[in-house]
Length: 123
Image (tube, rainbow, N blue to C red):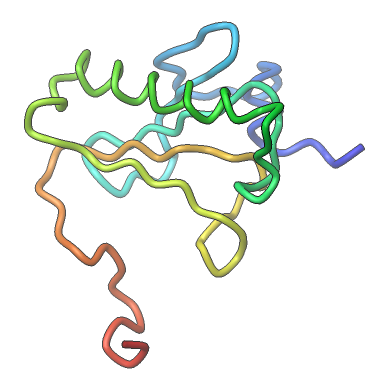
């Protein structure tokens, strides 16, 4: 069995988090290093390490993350103005906790492209 991640510990209430939503399958909490005025992580309670591990048996959980993201955006007043959702995969994709999670960012106008480092030299 894989080693427990920080998200597993949050799900099990072994460590504190600023939880703003919870249901049978998902948990949402404020990011400890926010990149926007509203920055929440939405996670499935069932551990899935990366997007590469999503399959027919657990794909419904990923859809549920988006349902929760939309619900939170509406409840917190960001649905109409807009918000960004991001899911990173593996090291080069920026994933640091290997338990899939959806970042929900809002509260400011966001530009495109989203990355700032190595932008021009890689294009």
